[in-house]
Length: 161
Image (cartoon, rainbow, N blue to C red; front, side, top):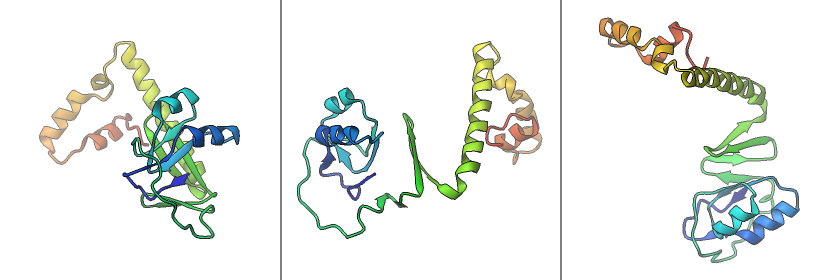
């Protein structure tokens, strides 16, 4: 975790920092700020998630608090070593250690349901058919307050449950 206060006027890391982090055994970086040296970072292959890129490096050296290496802020989140950071091509999420088992269980169930739906679609069964969409339209005509999520729940196709 690198906390550069969400600054958008300077990059706080580049290829040298990424190489050093990789050599130290770090598996990836989340930067609340910008990075530079994008081509080199891609070549290095260390996963880096930031707010974007800019060619200019750090513009100053700010004083830091004595506990600066015990926590990092990323937007509204204050993270410590008891938090889990999970990232993929879609982005980054922060997980509280106490809720981790429940979150993992829910995420695995969602992934399984979505993979099953996608497999059926690849085999020719549209999601509209799986979700009984025509039935939803007919039910909604009778009850305009019926939401699609509620319909999915009633036909056993809800992803989040």
